[in-house]
Image (cartoon, rainbow, N blue to C red; front, top):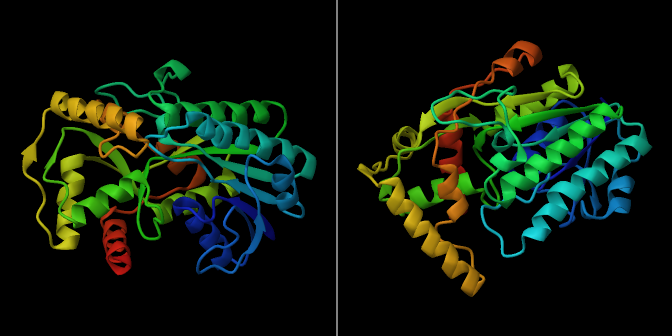
Amino acid sequence: MKRALVTGATGFVGWHVARLLRERGVEVRALSRSGSVVELDVDVVQGDLRDASAVGRAMVGCSHVFHVAADYRLWTAEPEEMYASNVEGTRNVMTAVRKAGVERVVYCSTVGAVGMRAGMIADEASPVSVADMKGHYKRSKFLAEVVALEAAKEGVPVVVVNPTTPVGDHDFKPTPTGKVIVDFLEGKIPAYIDTGLNYVDVADVAMGHLLAAERGRVGERYILGGENLTLKGMLDRLAAVSGLKAPTVEIPYAVAYGAAWASTLWAKVTGKHPGIPLDGVRYAHIKMWVSQAKAERELGYQATAVDGALRRAVEWFRGRA
């Protein structure tokens, strides 16, 4: 691999993918609306995923594409913008790949597009449909994954990866999970609800992208996960690495849902982001626990304990405060 295009290199996961590629001596080109990628020596093509011509220009001369960019928000006043970026942007990437003759494209989906049921450990084969997707983010990413997998059936050399919940440094915006860490550090999480996620070091996710490019089977999807933890368990670990106290009060789901419903309703009135997005609470209705055994078996993927990633996240967010 001599030159690779990374979409989303100014974001959390994309930045780590770009950094890992550079560490391996790969020339990196980034498609970016901002025109710069902090701390990394990469060639930047200014443009937007929704602009097919910009995507095509950025791809010229690249043997590999890592399509990581996404509109990742749990609430938006303009959902059509999210679909334009996530679904139509992915369609633009797949069209450009066909024209450019790229050797391999890795599409970064989300574990939210995997079938989830209460009390089960999900994997890539878990039954799922668009009707299971709650909220615009999950729905748009599911539809974008459909675009990628349909392209694979038509001969596009695309492999799909489904990261779980990445944590670590350089979470710029931050992501919704990064916001939880920031809120914890600022003493804004006095309680928790009984839910759970699979948390993973973002550095492991970046490595998973490269392994998918090297060893992944075209048209297949691979969960890039780490540890299945309850929210309480994650906050306890966050407390251990930060030196702060973890919350000890559990809030009933119905109370959290009511607060989120009111917060999101007020957001529709004001146009401002809700303090408690309703979709975030909806996602928490079941524990989103998964197995990454397929990625371990087929890609040689290995996940580390999430504690180190939480420590790096704490240090990075504190350094920016």
